[in-house]
Image 1 (cartoon, rainbow, N blue to C red):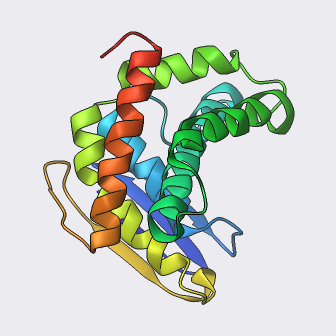
Image 2: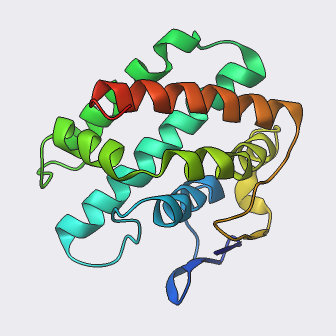
Length: 187
């Protein structure tokens, strides 16, 4: 898997499947990494190309992961977000995403959430999550993340380390994934 991201060109690759965009974007590199992590750890839509429904489901999956990771990032770095509210706030955002932002959405918000929880490989996504947290920390260091070049090359069997904050993020993420799986009876 690879991510190559500059202000003028962004691409993510999973095996031989590559999604790329030429030109400026208002999307942060970590959102594109969320797409890639979805592809590496689920059987869900990850590539935003394809039919309208496929594209919307791929965006849902990436936004769910990106939102959850971001809220965890703020929690472990700053403590501003109470840990017990991370999942609830994420699901509230995802309902807005389905019913307002991407309306009409191909399925109900609850079904999209259940699909995510059913098909995610929890062990794998937890193990790879420090990649996201390290990128998120760099994006949120007070400088403009869209003004930098970013690259990442990894394998789905990798077990990245990271800063104490990134590793704490992985621990909190594991707790949140467990709550999500219990919510859909897939403990």
